[in-house]
Amino acid sequence: MRKLERENESLRHAIENYRELERRRASGPSAPGTAGGEDAEDGEEDEVEKAVEVSPNGTFLKFNEEIGRGSFKTVYKGLDTTTGVFVRLLSGNRLSKKDRDRFREEADLMKGLTHPNIVRFYDFWEVDKPKRSCIVLVTELMTSGTLRTYLKNFGQKKVSLKIIKLWCRQILRGLQFLHSRNPPIIHRDLKCDNIFISGTTGQVKVGDLGLATLKNRSFAKSVIGTPEFMAPEVYEEHYDEAVDVYAFGMCMLEMVTAEYPYSECTGPAQIYKKVITGIKPSSFEKIEDAQTRELIEWCTRLNNKERPTVKQLLNHEFFAEDCGMRLDVANREETVSSDRSVIELQLRVLDAKKRRDTHKENEAIQFNYVLNKDNPEETAKQMVMSGLLAEENWRPVAKMIVNQIQSLVRAREEKRREQAVPQTQSAPAAGPAPTAPGAAVHASVHASASLPAVSAPVDTSVSTESDAALSEKKEKKIRPRRRKTCERLPRLTVLEVKGSDNGPVVSCLLETNQSQAITFKFDLHEADVTAISYKMVYECNRLQ
Image (cartoon, rainbow, N blue to C red; front, side, top):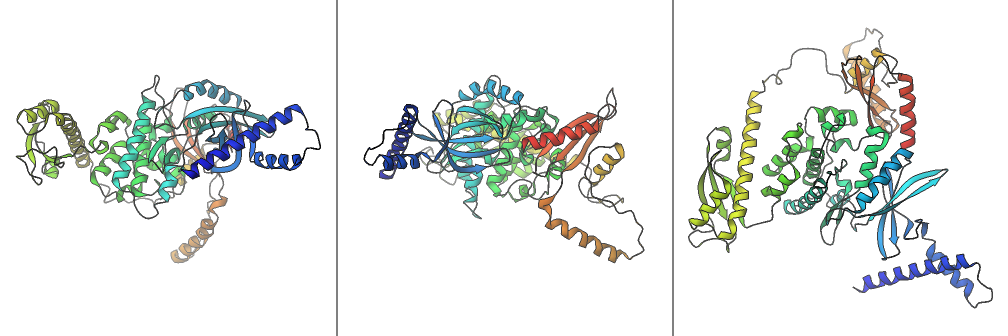
């Protein structure tokens, strides 16, 4: 308490000194001869020197204390002079006039987003100088930083499932608030780097909403966010709130495994190929808890129509508050493999205060539920009328029945899909050896026209050396590349070629040397590929 009082006192002094210095500057130089005046003024200037920039209205001070940095932003510590509360200042990269106009329209909307699990957006101001043109965002400052940084503090020790559930509930509540606006607000760039936590209270908030909007509006929606957390439909630029559910599933995967999704991939092109084919990250196999694994798989399904809504997730028993009861499907594996409509359920009352005298701690209430016939609420009320449950417990039991039946139906559908897939992958047909990701695509780029693709040189000379000597030479050529990964050049990959009334339409993915991923499309017959390449280089340099 004393430490907090001292910090508040120092803040008050800093604000008073700053305001006093502003008054002196406005009134002109002070008269000489004042005893100790020069020393006092120097002390005040030293105190104010920490503030390197002031908002146009004089409300916010920006200190030269960098607290975070990303490919799109630099984060500084700031101060609200009206309240004495520290804030977070995000200074973004250069933006076009069109992007600024769009952001101004959304600024008032973001100021009105007030929710316990959404980082508060206070204000913004524009910096328009010859060598520096950007927008500075002022948001709430969370004391413990991002959730990803917080996870790193645990080291090799995994976070308990109880804490993960607590975090996830708060993230889902924040997303539900955004998705329930009219029109719905989609975050588009949800990841653990954009989720913030207060370590002293355990409060979690979803942040960088305005920044995510800026990133996705830049470069005609072609500059996309973080590939590891992007749903497949984002690449097609036709998406809805389901992209946030997909990203939430990847965030949950990172919390459970303490590994960044798709860390086994070497670049955005490899991640893209896995994402659009529905291949999960390798860390997905490390999930130990079956229910957690099922939930993450549900959230990250390839078809966005098969993913749950945020509301469905909040109603799921996994994220529900501990009600002192647990419901399970009896002989679950056998029930999943069968097509029986009569399901045996077992309810265990773990809280002694909710347990009836007729039931012991190790006993379960077993009852049948008929699919497509019985109603969860009516079933729970019948248990109350039979004296098996207290009247205040029928709602939690009804919700648990709904969740168990939905989980069982999903498991049966997944089982049927696995059985329907022909087992041909175990014995692949003979054919050419697999190539490195993007190799075939680069070949098609060179054959199509003069597209500005970067490809590794191909050695077409005929050699008479043995296979062993050739393989040894290849290994020697590859080793230096691994040491020079930081010096890689931009890389262009053709994603697909679709036919249209005007001819073939080519979709491409460009990986810049700053690990940015840019997708774009063009008409093969009518487009000027040279102009496209110059435009891409210009936009990449502008956004860096």
